Length: 599
Image (tube, rainbow, N blue to C red; front, side):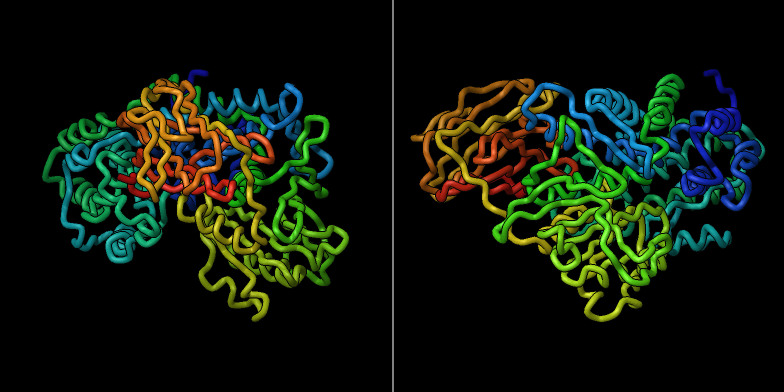
């Protein structure tokens, strides 16, 4: 595909039916217009024609807007692979989605794995923000963040960013008519915008960004640490306002401004992806079978978060090698609790007189529910979860869903899991007695660590205590990791006695390490009997790579069969992981945390 202009590329995508700008992809187009600095009130294709944007600019912004999609696909791949590994035969797992009634889509896991691996590799190469704090501060035109702009739209954004610490995108510069300058401005804006987008992965505001991770800011070289310092010093506003001033004041020639901005922007990998890589990325993404079902994909991804919330204790219903998500409802899994087994269902219907939600007729059908007795589904549902993938807040839709589900399931907690924002007063219209069973999780997406942790907490709060996993001794604790990370270590600590078994001290009484391995080759910790005191199992990366890059996996045999444990959402830059505890009562306790390494 040889594409010369951004308009020609857009027409190619639309003509091929890969993007539907007036219907399915309306929100996507509005977001692209905003991030590219185009007028969202005008025809997108006309705005592309008038702009100085290149095909590369368009593709890069498209991929950045859809990075969460590739992250969801990675999470689903991990979950499906774990389900497949527990099956008795060697056949590849078949996943069947019925996003539209009567039109099931079959996805073979082996093909899904190939597609996702290829896609995520290319997307990471295109969208990563691999910069140092020093290089960002070299931006050539910065000014005082408190300087009031005479441009109303820019001033509204400045106040929001500086006074309220809201990390929304900034208004773009209008074309100057000088092609070199316009291209340089777009390059610089893409870097500044990437900083804001990377920030919003952790939180939309300073409060959300900093919540729950004290002490992590300032980690040398970590993305989150760099972002924290940048926003504390108002780097984004000082850069945006400074660039605006120098362009409007005309104190320098257009060529001087263009050269300075281009020299600064060209040092970053984000602006240096080749045309071939960019086109490969967009073609990989748009050819996926799930591309046209992206909204439904969010609901499917929530299953990975439910599974993590219950420590992977779901036993999935796989019939003849197939895991099904039918439109009309189906049991997905069983969860053993101290009060007896619960069934996890998708799209289970139950009656409700006069529901408020659009499209509901005398019934409700939440995306997921945990139910004790399907014959009394109204009264024995413990938890219902409804996914809302809207990029913008739609108060009525959210309020009606919460009202219908809390009214129709009188003994259940109801979680509204929203990809985007939700109005702060969404519960105001819900009657007392229902509203105290309604939980809203905002901005729940793959990189939103705080939202994911809150979701897990609320799921656990709504369900009875889970049955403990019992261990059979002797047992092996096996560590593997990504082979491109050279040196990762497995540790066993007994905090009460000070015992520490690792590669420098490979044996103590009933605990022995099988040696020191490298490049992902298994390290095995042999524990011959139930420990007298709690034995904490840790992993550390000796190299400079973080845990998120090493991707460690601990495998251990339990009474329910082999269990694989992975870090669910490691903070950026951390190199240690407290995975689990072996308890003196013979049980396993999953910790999955990243506190300071014990000494």
